[in-house]
Image (tube, rainbow, N blue to C red; front, side):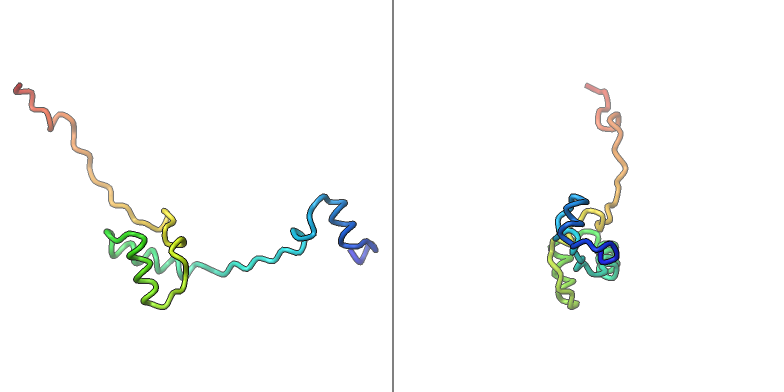
Length: 93
């Protein structure tokens, strides 16, 4: 903007964006170590829910909110073979 001699206000008005959007800086940190640890816990302790996983993370020193743990992509679901309908009904009736 200094190159063209325009103020920030006028440049944002020209582009039709807010000045707060122009000045936005993300505060997000890298969550990959946390995600990796959640996946490890979910893989080894299949029957644990998000609350129990969150307790384990707190004991290890992670100070993250439980909402990070509830994301469904972290849970490892075990699939079970569906029983065929014919095995339930024998047809002897």
